[in-house]
Image (cartoon, rainbow, N blue to C red):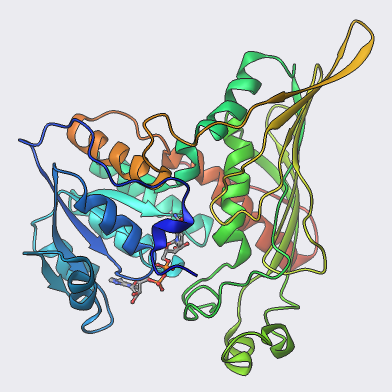
Length: 390
Ligand SMILES: NC(=O)c1ccc[n+]([C@@H]2O[C@H](COP(=O)([O-])OP(=O)(O)OC[C@H]3O[C@@H](n4cnc5c(N)ncnc54)[C@H](O)[C@@H]3O)[C@@H](O)[C@H]2O)c1
């Protein structure tokens, strides 16, 4: 596997667009692990961004990270608190593991700092609600790092639904999933309860949900029957190709498979399934069913939620059953990558104001579904999803 994290994202060319470089945004990165590498490479390519602060709780990690990427003049801090307290940043990328999303985000917002928070939003619904309260009180920008939203193909799914071509949408089925894809051996922060908190759902399930929910306007989830399991992650025999099978199995404390049947506002049923590991090649394509047409979205292993072959629409025309393809497009119009565009839009919103592309008001529903699946699984029956007033 390539050493460069950006090779995992289609067409990430770090070129500079025409921007007003006379107004520079001072940015900090909290958590200098794997995904922070994608953030730093894109920020360094932006003429109007200065990365002035880096924080990591592992001593020396932020300094080594700066050295690796040639960051000059940044200050280093032992956690998000010291970085924010120093008062030098206008915006932060929060690139910490899932269990450390809420606390740094709340701290940053409470101190008037704009936040790009990596996905998933949080681990629990309660945490997400607290982050949104801080966002509301601060009046600052909060956006969640779903870069597939920048993809022209993802945008096309939404445009098709909005065009009315499919009629009234009544059923969504998630697709994709991995046969053998628990994210080891990249450390254990993804698989431990205390750091990852949630597993396949937080890693790739949130993308799968976002693709479908965004397409249909993010309706509120009402009830959920959920299931989670960990048969593969807790079994040392799963990790035969890894370096530390016993350690990984011992530390595994999250879901490696999850399913949910979710009622959404507007009479839409969502059939969700996601997998890091299973005895099956794929759970199939994602589908959207409407009264006038159906849409098939090609299966993906969901490592970043993008897909690479055409969409297919199914309809009845003059009594005949027809199918037609929507050609697959280059992921972005500007030829820059999804990750670049995700951070570019964040920086632009910090500079110019306006609604972020991926607002918390949508992703709270994504989080509520994940949270609902866990809670329903724990009690073994359907639950009502209740989201407190914010
Ligand atoms: N958008 C994407 O495509 C994408 C891809 C991979 C991971 N992610 C998300 O990014 C997050 C991080 O994943 P990763 O693979 O980089 O994990 P990682 O474990 O490699 O890095 C996380 C870093 O955060 C540090 N940290 C934790 N708490 C901290 C705190 N309070 N202050 C400062 N540093 C702190 C840790 O020491 C670690 O170095 C996860 O939530 C993951 O879901 C997003």
